[in-house]
Length: 315
Ligand code: AVI
Image 1: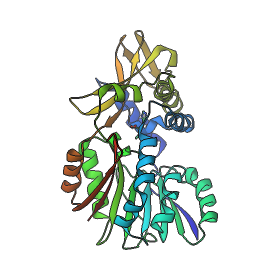
Image 2: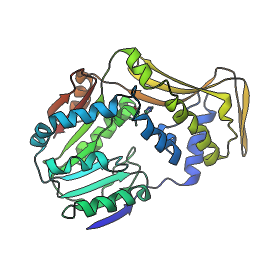
Image 3: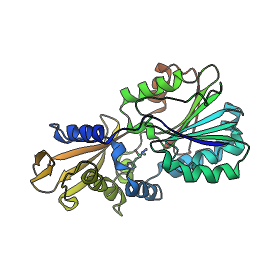
């Protein structure tokens, strides 16, 4: 059985208001979710193939090496709720080990899920599948049809790193509240490591991450009618060790005025728009966060270099 539900879709006006407030702030910023238009999502897929971008392949290695132990820790028969499911491929690899009774992929747009989910349903006809279109970063509204007691939330890829620690705590608390008696969370977390490795992962030699970041300007032109000239901006991506995060910025190559309907802003040469943070944790700092959110039984698996960690947090 396959169904689709669209929840809290953000309307065009509130998207415009949010973006223009960020662009007009003294230190201009945009939410990382705007990096993902159709081209941005393809560029992110390309990033995952880069030799410098270790998180995707390292997480896959952990699942391959420790898949049996992970499945044993979780047990079978859960409702698998896949947050930010994309093409559903990561979760589908867990189906044979976890034997979920229901699969609930959640992504910002339900139309994005439709094709992958239809294909997956044919492959696994006995699993009930419900695709949900929802921006789960601010609220987690699960429909009544996702009522199963044993809910397993799945949040791979270290996407939690794109929230601030305060947002992460609130997000983990919402998941904990939605878990009921026997639920849990299976999450991928990127770990602190040598700055040179982190810097290269977010500023690769081919310039794919630069294109991913710069593409935001085209997306903004489309969403709010700004007249950004992509050629006038430079990608900056580096590890800020004090804040334990990668920062991505777009830096004005020369002084310029950016205009939009009913407004404009001058950017001086070297002035930046802060476009993304990607927080890196230690096992200790992430354990603290999970415990503060109310999770009790924690299990961790990592790779031989300890670059990435998969964690199962049970209530
Ligand atoms: C989606 N997210 C976990 C990626 C990250 O590593 O923070 C996004 C990304 N930004 C630049 N490269 C990859």
